[in-house]
Image (cartoon, rainbow, N blue to C red; front, top):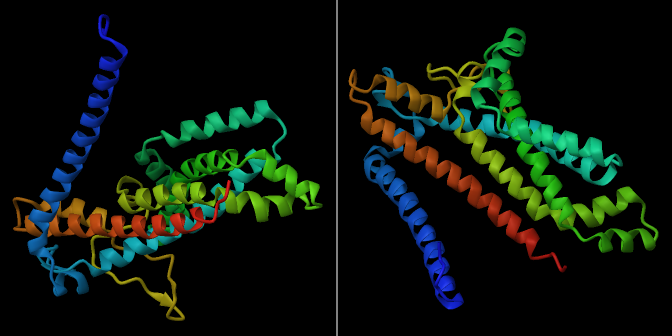
Length: 290
């Protein structure tokens, strides 16, 4: 394709294509953000952010949807983070069978590509029949969806830690678990947090798995046990599901402005959670000296 061009010309062409791709990606993302902000900013108000919706979303706000989304994300991470990080540590640090390890890793990678609606169907069949449509069922399903991503990113993060650090720790008399806990995990923490960031964004943006397992369109605050712990057996509101319902109603009621406002809040919420996680990750990355 580039026959007849010198090395310098090929380098310039390759750099131009790479730079053009980066600029195009930024322009597309900027365009999406701009459209959402332009159409949604008019719906943002104190009432919109602090009151529940009324009259099928034509009035009120989305505070119950924000609350429900936050609890679902937190519940999903409580399910997926310990299991995913623990599985990644075992597969990378303790599993001695390379063949079995590879089979498990390939299987996990395949699970990472399973459509979210399949997880929703699984939750409907095995969880809803037991605990009902509830925060618990939705959190478990979202957590299971995040497991493959967190396991794989944890494995990659642990592999990036030089073996010389492990060998040096053992040579100084540390046990294998002490080495993992005090040397390997702190060194791999930025990479592990990257997987958690992806998990948070995915949990906040999913609709299909929770529409059958966790959510309701009826405005409902999350009840608290002792004023702190949420009642995990009640259904909750959710920003993605609320947005879906508003889109269904477009043309029947004047809710397009509120739909854009909901999309803007959802985008801002995901960006804020990602930004916070990135700040934490960068804080730990500064302490790495290898």
